[in-house]
Length: 265
Image (cartoon, rainbow, N blue to C red; front, top):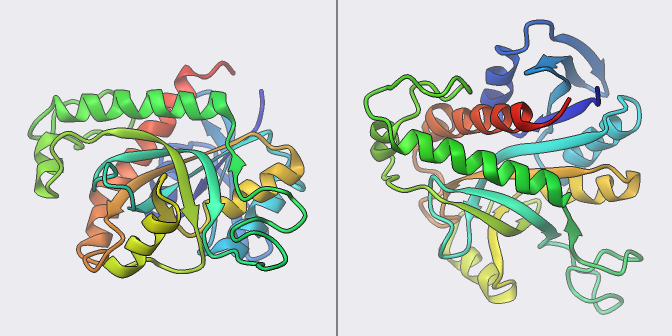
């Protein structure tokens, strides 16, 4: 049995996961609580990443080193940058880039000094599995109305009626480039600038690319799955916490559980 890390960006996601881990036990390191237990037949370590690249890198280093995880799933929300990435969609990263890295003129903009690249790739098999799980979860949710039975993956109460209350009709799953930076992108001007510089970017958040760099250093297979909570513009703050409680945290639990159940122990 291989130990899997589930790294949550939001307290709501972590709490929802811990409710499903009957034997979770905390281990405190570097001001963080790592919850070790089992979920759907797999040994898991669940932890909050902390906000920003440094906090995420510290968390990832402890997971890969001291806690000996053999793969990691990073979850959370993101702002949609690409036109296709709408609120309620799910983005599975194929590559990640730090949009605020700029060591020019010594190195090209965005390139990580001495790595020879600006992008770190996720594990292809993990990302494909999470994308498939997300498509199954979103398809099941949109077929139900008024709090249907759910599929037993933790998405009970996640249905078309709830999604419609946030203006979500046909949520989709996208795979591609995700951006990270130590800034909450919340203006149309900033979002447009990211699209201009990085036109293939799907979404922007604050931790994933840091996790990716640490995972690269340790040779740790990892994947990043994000729920699009806003359009990274002037409306990015509207109903954010309600969206996390009602939609994003349920997406996370349902997608992760579906992935784990399809994964050989």
